[in-house]
Amino acid sequence: MEISGSLTAIGYGLSAIGGGIGVGLIFAAYMTSVARQPESQKTLQPMLFMGFALVEALAVLGLVLTFIK
Image (cartoon, rainbow, N blue to C red; front, side, top):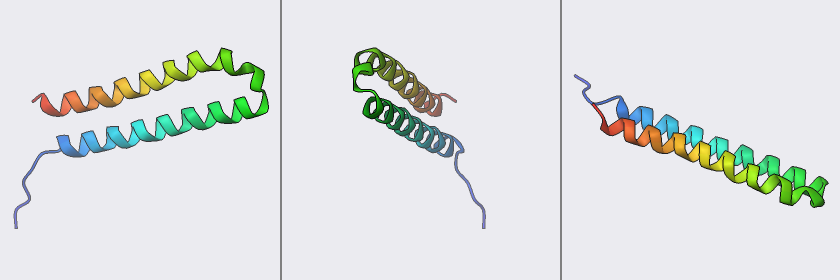
């Protein structure tokens, strides 16, 4: 029995899982901090979206790298 295939699918799967975990942690930290200090929402919201964009950009980069060979 011979196993054939590509490891790029596994690599993209891992990058998608990492992106999902990263987004979850970012939003959990944001909700916790705003629940503790609601007046800090306007300060924290831009940082939330910057972190979200960075994590998603890395996930998209993982998708792009799966198609490059």
